[in-house]
Image 1 (cartoon, rainbow, N blue to C red):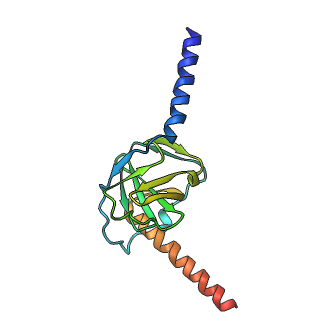
Image 2 (cartoon, rainbow, N blue to C red):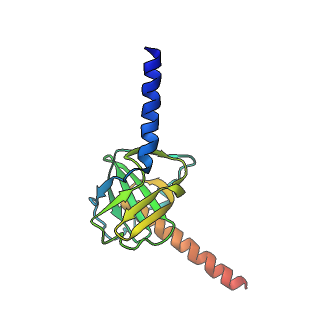
Length: 156
C-alpha cells in the first residue's frame, strides 16, 4: 500500500511539473479599466518579500502596454509589470499565461503572457488592493523615475 501511495505522489508531482511547459490557460478580460482616481494612495501597497502565491486566477485588466492586473478569486489582485511594452495586449480578446491558476511564483522572470503578437515576459508581480491602487502605484513610480532623471540631469 505504501509503495502505490509513493508512486501516485511522484506521478502527481511529475504531471504538475510537465503542465507548466504545456499550453497556457486563457483568461477573458473581465475587469473594466476606468481612469485612475487621484484619491488612490500608493502608500497602501506593499511589495511581497518572498514568493507570490496565486490561487484561482479568473480574470485580468489591462492598465497599459506594460502593466496588467490579474484577478484571483473575488478580492485578490496582482499587478504584473512586464519587462517591455507588450504590443497587442490591449487589443487581444484573451491572453495566455505560462502559469497555472493555482501556483507559487518564486522568480517572475520565467513567466510570460501570450498575446496574438507573441510572448511578453514578467518583470515583477505583486499583490495590490485594487486596479485603482495599481494605477496609483504605477503613476508614483513613474513620477519618482522622472524626478530621479531630472536630478541626474541637473547634477551633470
